[in-house]
Figure 1: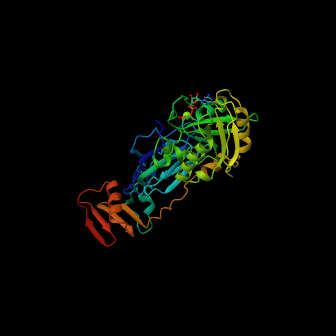
Figure 2 (figure 1 turned 60 degrees about the vertical axis):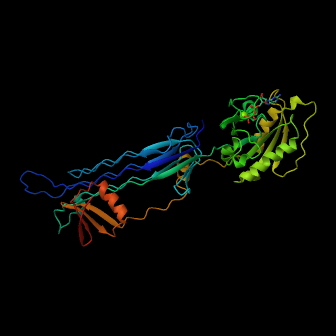
Figure 3 (figure 1 turned 90 degrees about the horizontal axis):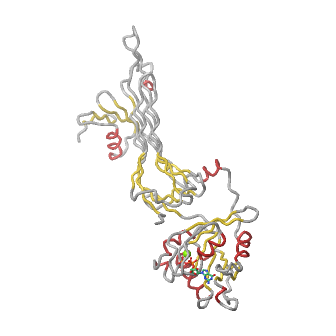
Length: 397
Ligand SMILES: Nc1nc2c(ncn2[C@@H]2O[C@H](COP(=O)(O)OP(=O)(O)OP(=O)(O)O)[C@@H](O)[C@H]2O)c(=O)[nH]1
Ligand SMILES: [Mg+2]
């Protein structure tokens, strides 16, 4: 099975707590504060890995957690940063949030995106020492990391993609022109999942060509197999429209597929097409093709069985498929693919401290729910005091 979707719950790491600690020295009855800061929580990071073919590495609704930041310690020692959770996904994976909005597009090998940020570590008590407050008996607590549900959707990246009715010979043609070896058989719906092949020119240029399951009438409404895979055509710059020219009227077959492309939308019906009339070995005359359409940039008559015309098709691909824009250097691509959009988390308007008797919240307190989550993750217990501004409450479960 080819998995092109996955839904994940991501929980970034909690930041470590700041330390409440005082120097202990010989002959000094009470040393100054020396509590260090907590480490930041680990992030959840997605990385586009050219070795991955699909999203089958993820279980459905898998929960993914990053490491917790270490607590600060005495002698100003800082807690360790929590370990990031690195998730490797195929190139072409798009990330959507729970509201189905696109967060990121991992369209280049090595592209990475932080989908959930670890919580900040709390500051240790040393940071709060001042001439008027020499022994602060409190420190900041670490913040919980981001948490949420993300949807991964793989949309294959190919320069060109075959499209056509089942049995047209798409897989046979891909086998002829590329290094891919998809299954070929004399019955429709042989190809069950997309296959990518690399086609090489004599000058060393490479093109990636996709073969997807055949489409039938009604595919865009969910009939047959093809509709699920139409999304993989979206990123192809040119469609290779394969037609079995030995069966019926090629024009009618072309129109059937064209109707499905139009019904699917997403620009598939505007894409340039190379029409490939296949199986010429089965008819004595070269097949007729009468469609006049400005999207059709060339018509080839070939036989995947004998190889007739296939080399011309292969060579023409390099001429007809537009070159991809120059790929920037790796460092740049890593940035290019960062978050397509995401509201920057607002600066926190409040601080949460651990005190000798419980917790203290300063500034503009967050919503009750968020505060509860923060206090719980900081280990609040029944009976602890929680100071909110001038108010002091007692924590009850
Ligand atoms: N005679 C002849 N047979 C061909 C030619 N091309 C493909 N075939 C045969 O047609 C049948 C279907 O070929 P496939 O390449 O599997 O067709 P497909 O378009 O990938 O089909 P689906 O994966 O089901 O969509 C196989 O039996 C092939 O051997 C050709 O040029 N001439
Ligand atoms: Mg096939």
